[in-house]
Image (cartoon, rainbow, N blue to C red):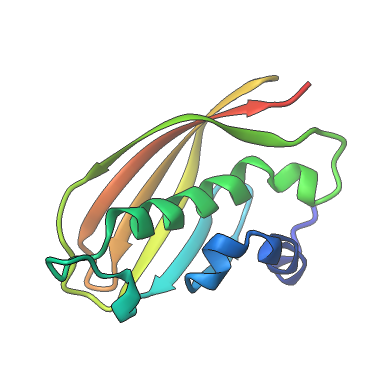
Length: 137
């Protein structure tokens, strides 16, 4: 698979909710997609912690990029959409940036499963998502 990071970043600029919230695609390989988000005041909730939806959106973009990587890179495959996911929020961050790393646990013809680990720039595991994708027939 020919992976062109700039092309992939440009393709996913259309994911406006993620990009307008400051999420960027940092690196892409077949085995791992890394997305990051510098934390801003608008990412905080009433208690001053990073809002769960911001963390979820970061993980969701890493998942979307990873499960659609082959299609975006020109292989003859169809769009994969999220079927279900579960996210566990483990710690509150004291860091200034979050990074989501997606790894594929299983990829079948129709169903795929990914683990997305969200860490802060201090090396603390903040959350973990398990996401199932469904490839549209």
